[in-house]
Image 1 (tube, rainbow, N blue to C red):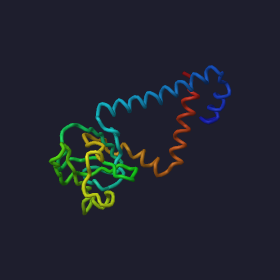
Image 2 (spheres, helix red, strand yellow):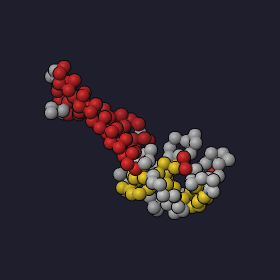
Image 3 (tube, rainbow, N blue to C red):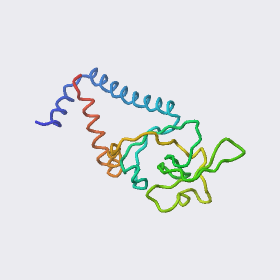
Image 4 (cartoon, rainbow, N blue to C red):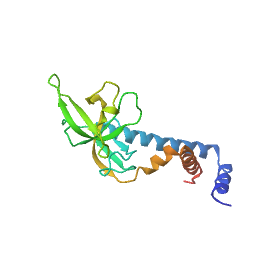
Length: 180
């Protein structure tokens, strides 16, 4: 009869107790994922310990779809490092290389100027109007490692939301109808 037919038959044969057990199991899986994410945030010091490269602006260093692992340490950021930053009024973080560092005398913080390796000019055109440098609060973390192309599934699901909903629905159905 097929996967869908078997899943429907399986759903019909569920008892209330079994259904509640499956929903609790699914909730525990989701809760575990959130706990792991929060743990990674604490360990790395970054609000987003893992990001996906969304554009070609960092080629050849990173390709679209690469997953970057971030860490935000106490060491000052230096020219040449790859950082991930947020800009005011923009939702999507940007992955670019630091090309200049401006040390402020009044604090221990520094200001940085960034540029994509594959871009012709620095990122001042991307910054908020009138902003010339990124401050410490804009930096989410510095890249410490990567996995090539593994994040492409995220890009596909973002560009085609129907695929995301089908995948979530199939995983939910699979979790609820599993016999264990």
